[in-house]
Length: 308
Image (cartoon, rainbow, N blue to C red):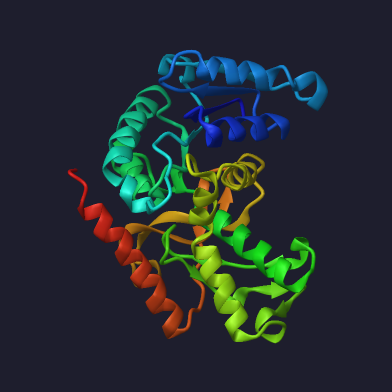
């Protein structure tokens, strides 16, 4: 891929740009922010690590969307971070305005780009990006399930004292407290966790995964998670850019899948060069499907609060 733009030079955006460069995922990376000097300084700092990290990707910072023109992929991280006591939904109005403005600029300058949304509340901001851009639904994807799944996998590995490499999991639904970890699809080297952990322990791990972001916010006080979110979004970018066709949980626009329509919600998808190549429909139990639909309704309620 020739050009990737990362919108927002805060912790998530800058770390994402760094990981993209170190993984050689583009010839050129543009880091853009409204604050003068910040994207320029962070981009230069990342670029100056290239002789040590051995990447030839060019990294530039800017305050002008003209410099982002003809990007192949745009990753939107712009927005206000959570503070202790805040839910993702508390950011709704302020971040909707930010993402609306950003998306319009992106669509004007890079009409063929694929969009990955990271801004919170994630599923609603993905809806904003889809509607404002006018892009096809396969080109607007929210980063949610990979991060939620990574947290769940870590907590399972920690509880069992096993390698995270051997833990597979799937977390669906909205990126919030109503997310739906699927224990039936959570295994350790193919062994279902229900055979390895008691039910009360599994419930505790699920609840910790649901509140994983808030746990970090409560520690940091003045910010929110950025190392794991940046890893998750770069995993998506890698699958798309290299056409790996990996099956990953992402927030996507549903039109009847799982009996859900007109809302962004986390489900497993195949990610390749065209973005969403296919939405995978799992055979969920009635209880799992009910939880997924309830999670989607939480997202829908927040979408209704928007003024457009």
